[in-house]
Image (cartoon, rainbow, N blue to C red):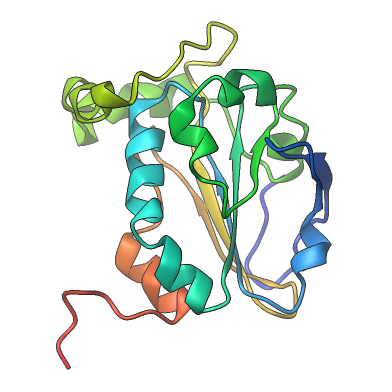
Length: 187
């Protein structure tokens, strides 16, 4: 079941990469960016995480809470030094995809194939090759990413279900939600 704009976020509890129990409702009163990514080895997802890490300080200064979910297990994610470097934000492995199901994140062969019309998988792999990302043979090849923006009242103000493997909310929209100015914005 898809999450709709205007409804309250669905609460969940999970253990993050560092062994901390995370409840989404613990962040009520803050803006929350909830990102669902494919797996620890996905070049598109890791490129996106890299882009978000460049905004880490601005998001922190704006009081925005980021939570990142991966379909890989916490153990698999922990084997990646890149993912351990996201320590400011909870990174949650959901290899059973319980939270993915709660938020209606889908598997789609058609949308996976659609990726080749919109993105360059080989270029994305080259862009993240230096990260030496671990393989995750248990991961689905057809899981489609999703992003949710949740306001201080715990209401969903944006629900973006991807149309292909590299389809996340535009970074300028994310910056606008967070209340941080784009580096390209005119004064």
